[in-house]
Length: 96
Image 1 (cartoon, one colour):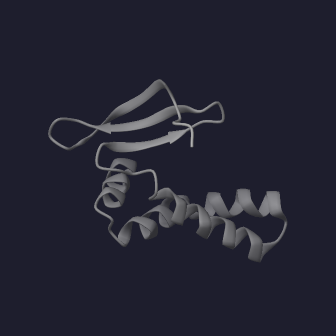
Image 2 (tube, rainbow, N blue to C red):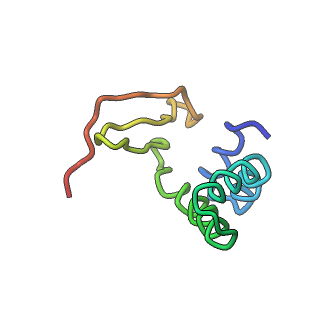
């Protein structure tokens, strides 16, 4: 499945989204987390937490996240509600 299709599943809040993400990226994520954490159980928990966190940044206007400096990055929906191109916007994170 293509990344755009997986992202659309997240937008739809489909249960299939995490399964498709795991199918495509699970091995790589587990390998990275296991290399860092050196513990199978901890790495599985890390991967699970990552999947659960993915859906949070997706909203009706797009899928955005903030980098370490507080600048927004992401994908916006176009006027038809379709996932548009990548945006790298110099927008600072709102202060809490």
